Image (cartoon, rainbow over all chains, first blue to last red; front, side, top):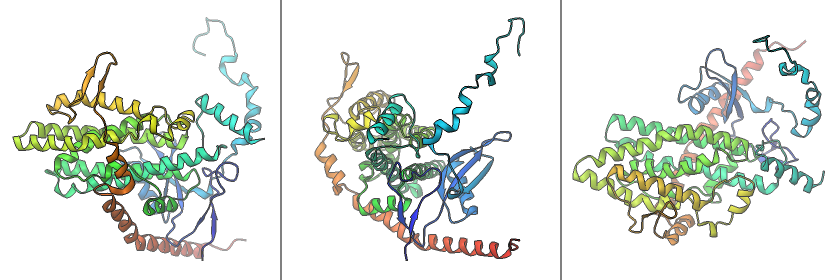
Length: 119
Length: 318
């Protein structure tokens, strides 16, 4: 039996942009995983891309082969894409508006005499 | 909001060099064009492994074998970056691959030419990857974010591909008469197909205008082709070889090399499936896919079984 499958993770457009995505689930379909890589100790993990894998262990092994062939990483995180919730770009205006007017949150807002160096 | 408003916002973003991201509204045709282009690009990387893979077991030294293996592994990686980028547009991986196997989606025609001698591996790296890089460097600035990011990663890795190819040819060009002849022969056979990689002339390319307006492409086929000719015409001198084009000549007025007419009949014949290796390539891809079926299935079943075990062990809530 094939069930309609709708992608719902962050990076897949839903009804508004692309087509509503329905595709056939087959027995060999592996889920999609998002890959995050720490390039060196002391830095954050950063989104590198995605890949398909049957489980988390395989996702990490595949991520090693796909995204770190040139020592780009010292640590890998993987998470199934469906668990990522993304903000809606169409609501970006309202979502970030509160920060827009608060210029006093930036150091450049304050004018100090030249004698005060390095503050 | 009306569709016209949405289209205007979309085009304004493009005009202002703001990247389009997967969840942003986009015209259906933009999405489709990107799916077509990115998936064809991905297929090209994957099919591109075949002509080179052909020489891994016969590379002339352990060093060359290791280099070629790394290069072919990179092509696989590049295919995967691109398939992932393509999926963000709402097409599943499996559909994309089915389209390749059914012949609905194309891949670069260059891979329908055979790699007959070891020198071909050098020529493929230098000319084919060289031509691909021209296109790919432009695409690092393409308007669709995930595609541009994949291209940045690819370009970083690709320059070794071209350099190793040139170096392999350089070795041959300094070798015995036989090796020199092999080098020249490979260049002769790969030169014109490499020029065809940039696609039809601008006057005949149906997708170009809209793609330029949407900044999917930023340079025309003919511009990129000229850039490539100018680069290779200089590099060939270092090899002490010649390009098989009697009309190739520096044009001081244009500040570019003039070059002879491309055989477009050949180009279209290969695109339509009548190249030397079209059938072979597609069969190899399908065979790999079909014979991997049981592996994909077994891994899926095993993952589900393990997941069930973990759930059984978890203490009941409450």
